[in-house]
Length: 283
Image (cartoon, rainbow, N blue to C red):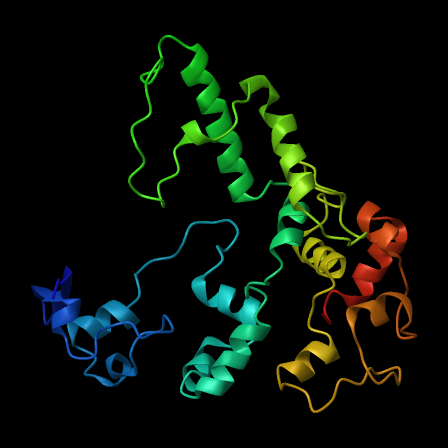
C-alpha cells in the first residue's frame, strides 16, 4: 500500500514536537466512497495527529475581501442538505441514491441535446474531421512524416487510421464538421437551436437561470412526474390540479405560472425569462 506522509508541528507545554504519520497507516484515517472522512477520525483522541489535521484550524485572521466558496458550500448548494446530515444519509443506500439523482450536479442523459445546447459538435464528428484534415496534409505537404507513404496491412480492426477517411482541406473543416453534424442529428426539438458551433441565446443569464432555461429546452427537470418516477413523490399531480405535471404542462398549460412557447425558449424572449423567474427554484 502506498502511504502519504505528513508532518505536523505543534506546541505542548512549551515544547515543540513534530509528528510524522501516514494517512494509510492510521486506522480509519481514510476517505470513504462518498468523499467524506471516516467517522473514526472524529471519535479518536484530540491529540492524535490525524485528528488535528482533520479538525484543526489555523491561527490568525483571513485577508479582507469576499469569502471564498468552500467544499461544504458546494454540497449544500447542489443537494440542499447540510454536510453533517449527508454523513447520516449516506448510511442508507436508497436514500443516498435519491439525493444523488435530485442533485443539480447529476448528469442528464441527453447527448444530442447536450451538444446543441453547448454549441459543440459531437466528439466522433470532431475526431473524424480532424482525421480528414490530417489526411489532406499527408497527401499534399512534403514536410509531413507520412508523405508518399504506403499503408501497411491492417492487423487490428480496432485501429482506425486517418488514412481511411475522406480528405478535407483544413480551411473547409468547419463546414465539413457542420455538414456531418446535421446529417447525424435527427432531433426534432424546436426549443433548441439547430446544429451550430456557438452558444444559443440566453448565454448572458446568471448560471441558475441558464440552467433552468436549458432544462426547459431539453424538457427535463425535477417536475412532479419525474420525482414520482424516481419514487420521491407519492403521485405526479400538479398543484394546479392536473394529474400529470410534466415539463410540457408547466410550459403551456399550468395555471400556477406564466407560459411560453418553444420559440420563446430558443430565442430567450421576455416571456421565457418571466417563466424562468417563476420556476427556477422549483424545477
